[in-house]
Length: 161
Image (cartoon, rainbow, N blue to C red; front, side, top):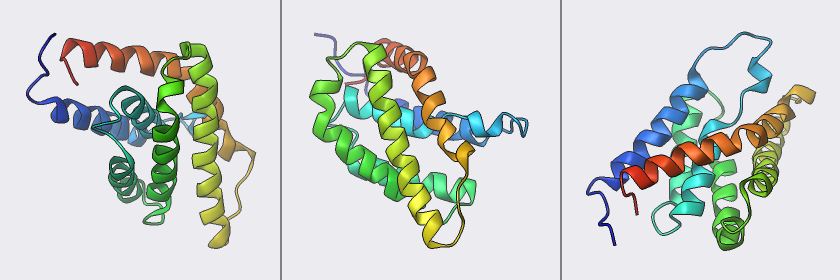
């Protein structure tokens, strides 16, 4: 058995920071609605891979950082990520046994749930959402295989356990 990298927590944190940086990276106005929910994807991956290290608390912290960084209502994305983290923790043993293409469909459902919670919060404060609000669920499904393969390579390369 290969020992765990002594700074596994740092590698996980850097992956979340990279996902947040990609989220904040400016894109053309026409492509902005197609931006996948990168931090949600990274959260789902780490919960599936390491449920003993990454969980509901991590989802809340990452969501709060994303709320602060993107200027959304404080707690909106944290609530969504916490709910998604809880559900992924309940189902991680099943999800990790599916092929990546089936995982992508499940990821789309989780991202859609994350968006439903965000839409609910926006509705409460009087900001309706349009069709483009739901597109990140689809694009997240499409990029899931890439996210999965990259993060799995990093986890194996640095022996993150």
